[in-house]
Image (cartoon, rainbow, N blue to C red; front, side):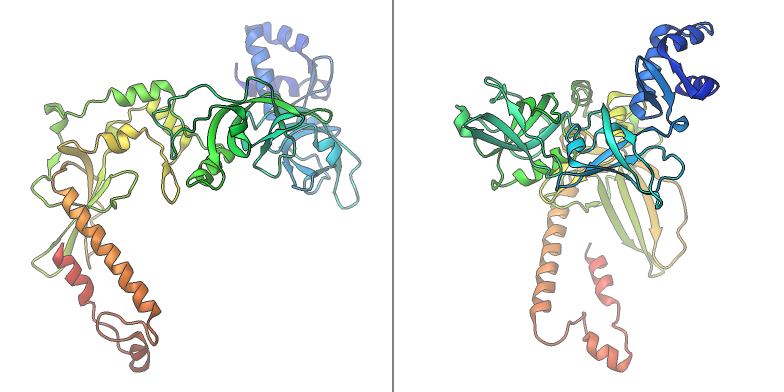
Length: 439
């Protein structure tokens, strides 16, 4: 059953209000099963489009001025604001939640609030009635061993509630994750070794205004000052998906590294060109390469070769659905949370040739605007040239830093910029041509 159909039906009822029993009976007369109606009600309530009042009675959020749904954003001082999904008429800004009421939920939760009197400036206070959806099923924090027991203090200062860890839930079971990002798994022998360590906790019972939450430790990250732990904390604090489902891993591992005759159809062989990768030696994936040649008329033709990922990622496959959910890779200074499994990013790279799509552009002429041209690249030409290009890049950066530290003026390839400003002269562009000629 589509959510829009149920919303349209409720909108026709008096005050946009109905009970579950009424909805299942009336929608059942239209051939909709009871289970479908209940699932639709649950989805719409979670989205904040339906408000559950009492005794299984629901009302459209757009039809009530007493209640509204939104996302709780906490302040580190203990109060918060609810960003409403649909603002009733007359309300300006967000709904203020005092510290006592804010303890009923956590930062990021979807909540139902009872609205107070609207002020002359459109401001309004509210009280949290219930939590509609929890945003922090897992959270990262510091393990504390106290006289009252073991607790995890959330790293996010906007989450004030501590999570109590019952006896036997402190040390997680061994976990092997082939796509773990960054640091290696931390091992401890006793609970005392965890004191002060950054951990990931799964919340089993959420806190309220009267009691702490209860959870279990599922991952040990290390101490906050250890190398790489800061990145691991950021990944988990912002809920970046850093583990691939098992079906995605199995599909990636089953992909063949051999290229059959059928895959040659419609592709051009570029293996006679000395294609150069533009990814550095420390890159997390190797999927771009270039080739530049000087034309008889003095112009330069640039070929840009990009790995043809669409060949491996088929529509509606497990890898495609996971990549759609992630949207992009997230890069950190020394690592990345990839959009695609590591087998596609790295393990398929050493193959003798690779599927690519090519773009061509000619300097000083209008781009031809042609479509990507499928082809193959030779792996054997890329590694030594990539290393050479990386060394040249590093040398150029060192020279630039030395130039910046030198008293006086920054110099171009032939004359100083300060001299150019005085005379109006422009530096000759032979430096770029020399670099192109060397490729």
